Image (cartoon, rainbow over all chains, first blue to last red; front, side, top):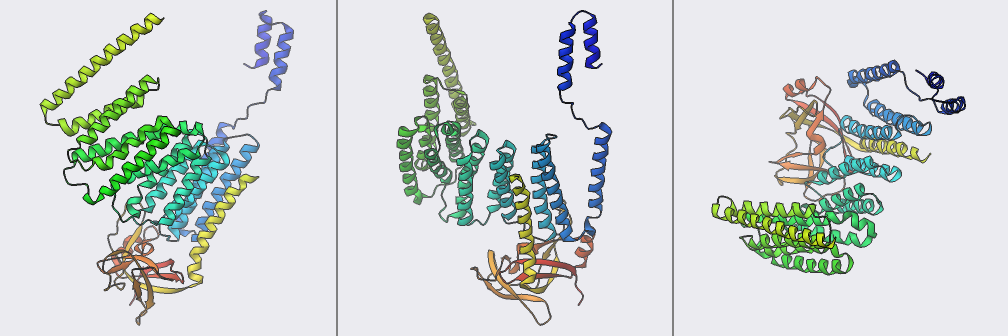
Amino acid sequence: MDTEQKLKQWQEAGLLDSETAERISVFEKRQPVPKKLPLLLMIGLIFFSLAIFSFIAANWQAIPDLAKVLVMLALMWLFYTIAYFSEKKAFGSPLLFRVIGLAMFGATLLVAAQTFHFPLANSLLPWIMFLAALAHYFYWRNLIYSVIGFFFGATVLLSFLPDIGWVEWVLFIAVAVTWFYFSKTFAPVAFSWLLLFASGFMLWGLVEYDSLLWPIWTLFALVLLLLIVPENKQRQIRPFYLLTAGMLLVVYLAVRGQTFISLVDKSHMAEAIALAAAAFGVLVLSFFKFRSLLWIAVPGLIGLLLFDETAIGLAVVAELSALGYLIIAQRQNEPLGLGFVYFIVVQFVIYIIYAWERLDMSLFFLIGALLLFLLSAIAWWINRRKEGVER
Amino acid sequence: MKSWIFPIAQTLIVVLLLVSYYAASWFGEQYVLRAEPFDPFDPFYGEYVMLQYPDLKSSEITNDSSIYFTLKRAEDGYAVIDRIENEPFFGAITGSVYDGSVTAPQLEQFYVEQGTGPGLESARDLQVTIDVSSWGTIRPIDLRERTE
């Protein structure tokens, strides 16, 4: 039933006076009519495009090499053009059309690479897509482009393997740092940070010296990023530093505790000492600049602790840092979720390393855990009563 | 209006890629290589033929993931290795050597028309025509059965 009819009905029922009904009908007439494509036209269009695509696919072999690439390029242009007009005339979703346009660009590159036998093993095509996605991101600032950028950034990193050169590596870091620096929202900041951290792993391929500690060095190097970003961005990425530091501790603990072969080259003592010194530097820097990140200095001890074959030192450090973090975060009224997850993971890893197949040990841990629960329950009870008194 | 920069720049990139590809023919030399198919099955990448080259042999360097070489035409018309080094030099093709057999990434596999793959694989005796630019890039032109 249309509006006019309804209004008439309401008027007759005495719900509306004629003046209001008049005003409503004038208002409704001024509203833009929703533009809708008729269903049949939509179905027709879908079938038509399917027909075009299957026609191209069926004759793919007969199409000359250059024409194949041109067809894909034409599709790319088509979608960018639709995007342009959809933005101008406000129909459809310009973002979607543009993303399809970008995808068509990727498809063009792939088709060109396949028809002309380009070597697919090098990093050229991922690089082009990575830069194109970033350019789109910087122009339109949309989350989807940062997701695409992250995907192709990771592909670039993977395509570096196994032969990786310094020039390309430095270039990649420069691009990722630029992305990091000029991004304001959480997702691109996080994505670029992850790419930067991952590029540290490439040092295994780049440097002759076979260090076990590259991820920790990378984390420490990334602390420098905090010096160039404003306060609010620091707060955004702080969890990444803490999470990574925690994960590094757990991973090194698990690896050291579970592998009985001599992982550590004795001649690497100098590096371990240097890492501890760097950790001290990080400690001092974060004490003065960003105190909540003091914890990321802890993995600096890993280098030295790896020399201990029983991994007890690592376990103690992981346990103390987990407890310490929880207690301090609790006292400062900060969120405890991640701290708890870390604490539990540490317990789990320690349990697997030391108490597997040892009932006495596992019982010891079980009783310890129960005691902890009891203590925390008592603490909670006392805390609650105190709060109750204050109220 | 600035948003048009994207499709324009992207088109330019594709054009650049294609030009760099055709440039190997404009400023280069054409070689015909004796080739044999091997390990010829991949369900994901469509139909292509994996190739190895009986004439491209290296006695000095037998196993290396990156080597640099140039080609020359032998008396029978098929290409053989001219110069092979561990270090890059101008005009060299970048490749690898395994068990004395030399190959380059662009030469290892050749996409063929759908349906022609099995025929080429069973033929065993193949020849590949490539253009090599004077700066060492390769443009594979053609893969066919060898008629000797």
